[in-house]
Structure formats: C-alpha cells, structure tokens
Length: 182
Image (tube, rainbow, N blue to C red; front, side, top):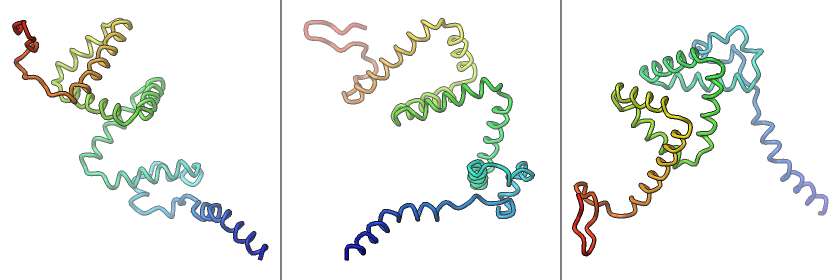
C-alpha cells in the first residue's frame, strides 16, 4: 500500500514534466512549412534549417500573421519595414529601448500614450512640423519642465473626470461675494 502511494505521488509530480516534454515539438523544417509560409519566408530558404529553433518559430508566427493581414495592413507593414531598414544601428537600438520601456508601463499609461500619439498623427502636417521644431529648440531643462507640466495636467484631468465639468464659456466659477471674472 505504501509503495502504491509513493508511485502515485511520483507520477503526479512528474506529470507536468512529461506534458512539457511532449509539448516541446521541434520547429518545422523548410519542407514541413505550408506553401504560403514558404512563399513569405523565401528569403530564409537557404539557411532555414540552420536557424535557431526560436528564430524559426518566431519567423513562422510572423508568416502566419502576414497571411491574416489585409492588403492595406501589408502595405503599412512594408512601409514600416522599409523605414526600419533605413535606420542606423544606433537608432534601431534606441527604438528597441523605447519599446521595452513602453511595454513595462502600466496599461493605463500605455493607453494614454497611444491616444496622444493618435492625436499627434491626426494633426495637419504643418502643425506637427511646428511642434517638432519647438521641441527641438527647447533646452533639456525646458523639456523636463514641459514633461512635468503635462504630467500634472494629465493628473488633474483624471481628477476632473470624477467632478462635473463646468460650462465651457466660464473661465472662473462665481464665488460668494465676488463677481465672475472674465
């Protein structure tokens, strides 16, 4: 009876390891890829079977994503890739670091940054150029002050959402004993 308990206990403890081992399939060889995947991954054909397994898996997932994209999404992806190719190694590294910092932000901050980015993209090109130029001409201290002011404003906006908003045409609320100033 005691032996059976030990056997059952060992089997229960080893079960996750056995599942992991069977789930750990080797990545597909070139000939195992579908015709569509081979078409998308053609630049890698000659060296496919020598690529590290993680890289092959990553590329295969990318090929599947590509196949599910609309023609417009594919064109946007081509444009982004062409832009990426033009970047210097230093610019690429900075972009990777910014992306990693973005991924570490809480979801609320990520969403706020996405909204700000969309707002900026929706501006007329002249306005975007003007804002970029103003930013370029700021000293590091001025940029820091600008960031701090934006953070305070956004913090206040969050609090204001909880309060009823005041009418747009009122600059200051009327206080007892004082007239509203305009």
